[in-house]
Amino acid sequence: MNYMPNKLNVEKSKLLILLLLLTLWFVLYLNLENLTNFLVYEIVNLSKSAHLTDAVWFFIFEVPKVLLLLILIVFGVGIIRSYFSPERTRKILGGKKLFAGNVLASLLGIVTPFCSCSAIPLFLGFVESGVPLGVTFSFLIAAPMINEVALVLLFGLFGWKTALLYMSTGLFIAMISGYIIGRLKLERYVEPWVYKVKAGHLEMDEDKITFPGRINAGVDAVKDIVSKVWIYIVIGIAVGAGIHGYVPENFMAGLMGKSAWWSVPIAVMLGVPMYSNAAGIIPIVQALLEKGASLGTVLAFMMSVIGLSLPETIILKKVLKLQLIFVFVGVVAVGIIIVGYLFNLIY
Amino acid sequence: MVSVKILGTGCKKCQTLEAKVRELVSSNSVDAVVEKVTDIQEIVGYGIMMTPGLVINEQVKSYGIIPKDEQIINWLKEN
Image (cartoon, rainbow over all chains, first blue to last red):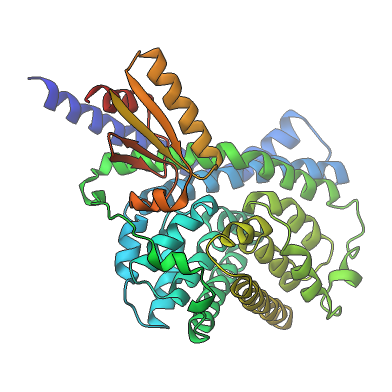
């Protein structure tokens, strides 16, 4: 009999805790610089302007900053994703025309929960319910490449412009590559059994999730993702701090700088077979940029590592013939190379 | 007897879920047959697009996540 009021109370106190945590977040984030100054100069009492002090300051400031950003964004994205199940996305994309479908699929790729281990069931589910092949590819390209961890790290370490550029060019690549694959009419290079699969259809109930339920989804996402990636962030920032002022500034400039025209395609060729999650690649990105590699080259490298990977293409081999896999990797790689050059031209 | 199927092609989450379900079944002494389904066509047949899937008595209970222990126990016992 007391069940309902109790439950309401629990939900209320949950919201209250959330509000408190959010306030705490802002207080911490806004005062991080002062706190770091206090810690480094007053408590540990390091002398200003020494190389070592710079490195220590950078580390002590950046680690909590990026982690705070990560927690907030992953939490927010976790809540947003509770509104977008793959079923709903599939329903939206079913029967969409090329281009409009590609644009939509790329955008939905950002907000729909995705893990590359689910690429095959997702591919089958999409194709079987009438989502065009090119549109499905737009989704499969955008989903891994543009993810919240990559965006947070780019934002936290290199500023909002870099994050925005990464997101918009990533979207662009996903749209155009999917469109081209759709235009080429490559359905014959999909394994024939794919079109014969009888996929079941689940009744979905994401509308029934209550708001506190979505908050739980956000909290779960934070636990899941932050526990996996924090170590890479610490390493990445340590690398950044370590080479800050120790390795010559233009160490990489000759090899991966703007003047080296070959650097973009080589970065992509190196990046495609490599696989890492977005967080794992950040230490390398940090080190390269710090030492004079140009932004376009580094972003191209990052995109090819996160967006295209050998394990994923091997998984796709189950449903696609080799020709289609080559077209897929080729089109995306060319797109990334163009973006790399574009960035090097602009910056 | 409860029939339990874990749908998954071998991702890490799928293995975690399988181990967890087996453990919960034996620690709660539920009379159940736990089976791992790795055939992709069969997995898709259940209509899920994210692995791992948890199917109890041919009904999809969850997919894409590892449900909480109490939740799994409830599902096991309601049958």
